[in-house]
Image (cartoon, rainbow, N blue to C red; front, side):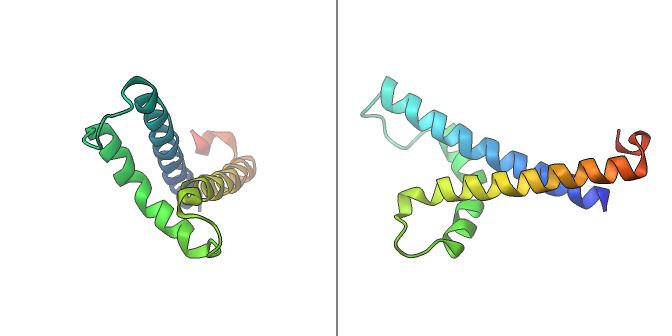
Length: 102
C-alpha cells in the first residue's frame, strides 16, 4: 500500500511541476519575446507531460468552463490528489514505523 501511495504522490508531483513550469515558461516567453512562435522544445516537453492530466480534467469539467481554464482545473485536482497521497503516506508511515518509510 505504501508503494501505491508513494507512486501516486510522485506522479502528482511530476504533473504539478509540469503544469507550473508550463505556466512560468509561457509568462516568461510573453515578456521576453512576445512574437515568439510555439517552437520551444521545453514548452513542448512540458505540454507533453501535462496534456494527459489536462484531458482528464476536461472530462469532469462542466461545459460552461472555458477551455483556457482546464489547466487550472487540472492543477487544483492534482493538488488535491497530492494532498490526499501525502496524508495517506504520513498515516501509513506512522502506522508502520519510520524505518520502513525511508
